[in-house]
Length: 100
Image 1 (cartoon, rainbow, N blue to C red):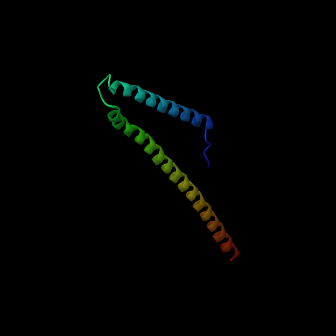
Image 2 (cartoon, rainbow, N blue to C red):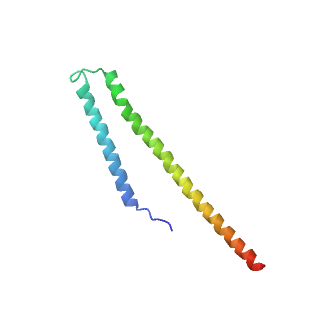
Image 3 (cartoon, rainbow, N blue to C red):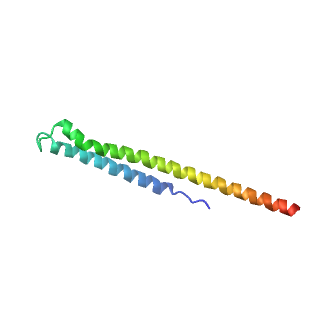
């Protein structure tokens, strides 16, 4: 039995995820000015080193989850194919026994 994908719900979840991501980037940009020369006195390079891991984390999370979803899809396709092969084998076995 195949599950129906609710495309409206998926679209809304994607929009919410994009909004949250945009807000986090905006907050990070605002925090950079707090740590700058007028705030804590960090140089632009030090601010870059402090905030860079967040961008790498976001990028790596996207790549890793994309690969996990791809593997899950491949496994699902593989399972469906193996079920079809089993059905064909059972059918052929039943027909050969019926002919005997």
